[in-house]
Image 1 (cartoon, rainbow over the protein chains, first blue to last red):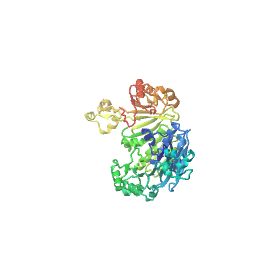
Image 2 (image 1 turned 180 degrees about the vertical axis):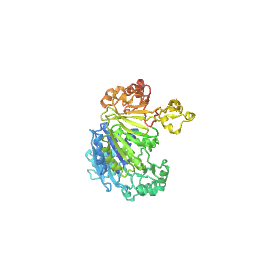
Image 3 (image 1 turned 60 degrees about the vertical axis):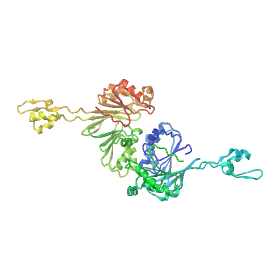
Image 4 (image 1 turned 120 degrees about the vertical axis):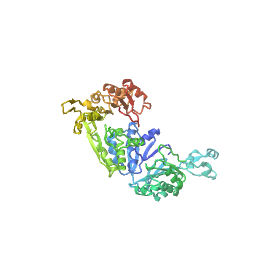
Length: 277
Length: 277
């Protein structure tokens, strides 16, 4: 987002895939961990260790539920001595709705999920950018430079004669801020709908097909059609489903099931880049 | 070996590669860790965790230098509660030559190596099998069944008339026991030569080419030509080189350098099966 990288969850082999895809990590400053199950965590130690070998210097912030620091710190001490950068842990409460990170471009909030251990999704919201100046109008009204910052923020301009020039004549709408929500792992939970309403893109887990509804409930996962139901009710722009059970060698069944409920569904696949329109 | 599986070292992503290659693990009972650097260890927690999900019941033995148990146990407790099988750690001294595992088919010994942390290679030696009975000769001399076990072990047969029938007429040579040596990570060390003399196959690390000889010395790794020199001096049947630095995108330089010193060199590549003749 805005030339910065954010990582969500870090399963085993993450760094290997990133190398295969030639993903540079110099703009990766923050990693967000949804819950403390191995398939969302086991790649961290290798990633950090490799950052050390590459002599990274920038701080690395890891946002995770309480407990990760205690389990990772002894490993860092043992395997990554003299690390060339700081690993800074930020514990958040997975059952609370809160802003857990904010920078100039982006705000990240938690989305409490329903899983076997405390788990949280993440809502990434781009901050609105300033309005775009229409240069010709600024020249036409001879607006002094010192007024420009306020006009970018939406203020009207009042001429020396007291005439109000509405801001809409002086500026254009900036690009609409993007909102992306990541929800995994979770059972079907309508409680998340108000939090992800109208996002441009929703990633929602779809571990099973509806034929395994009982197993989905028992393991606190979702089916493809449940993920799509959430997407439809929250009126999201696009749904990406993923976290499929290994039993589905061919993913088309999952995909079709979701598309029957919510048309704008894409299949989340390894090593694929998804653009948010 | 003899229908059993042994794993040596377990870097990040090992279980992923095994799934890709459809390697079954029901005959894997012993894992041997050469030294406690991340690239030889980070795959263990994920592998064990997945064995748990698959409801493995057989004990899993991990042979490693002192320290691994302390670092892995808290992770097992945190991520793998109610594991359906036992993980049993066996600490060995990397600087001593010793038999660290023995079963009906195989004997495994340590090969002290020269690295930045205590490190050990492993010598896998098949145990000799019994000689093969030549059925027609047994019938011809009317040898009673109760004598067969001793004859399989090499005893001659003496007829009632006192005639000695030499064992070589009654049995054939069994298949020659295979000997395999794994040496990684290590600087060039001629001390290992007597330990690996005449093995059928040697895996020796070759992190660098000779043009990086200084860097190899500093980091206590070997060059391709050094690996091949060890192979030649130990008169091994076949050399496999591996553990290449990421700088070598094309591995042919390493391969050629080794082949110039020792002809029977193969390039160790991911997801490749090497048979020992």
